[in-house]
Image 1 (cartoon, one colour):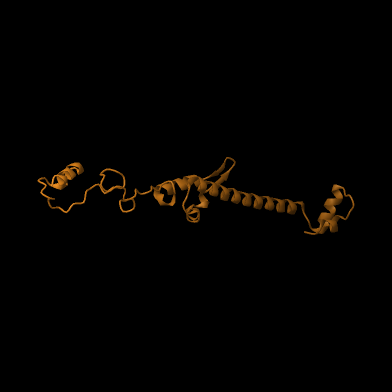
Image 2 (cartoon, rainbow, N blue to C red):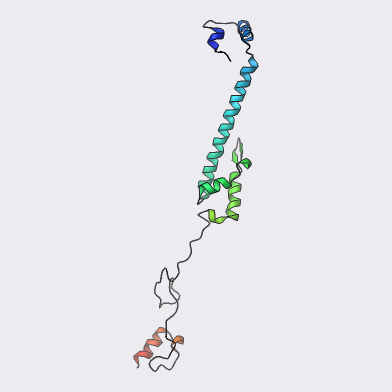
Length: 164
C-alpha cells in the first residue's frame, strides 16, 4: 500500500477526490477494511492467549501444585475457552488431575507419622507417640521373680527386683 502522503499530499480532499486518487493508485477501501479486520483478529487472538495463560497461572496457584511445569503441560489448552464471563476449562482439568494424580498437589499429600527410629520418645511408656510400646527383656526370669516379667507392669517388675 502506498504512503498516504504520496497519494494525497498535504492538501484537503473531498470524498470524490479521495476515491479518485485511491482508484488511480490501485487502493480500494476494502483493502483497508480487510487489513483492519485482520489486525483486530490477530489482537483478539493474542489477548485470548494472554487471558488463558493468566488463568492457568491463577488456577495453578489456587490448586497448590508441586511442579507447575509438569501440570501446565498436562493441561489441554485446546479445551480451554475464553468467553465474556471469563476463562473456562482449566479448573475442571485440575480437579480431575487432583483425583487421578494427587501426588502432584501439596494439599493432598499427608505427612507420614514419625517412626520410633526417627523420634524415639520414651521407649518405656507404651501408648505415647514415638514410643516403642514395649519393655525390652531377656526372656528369662529375673533374680528369683516368680511371675513372668513380660506380663508384669513396670511397678510390679521393679518391686520384684528390689525384694531380692
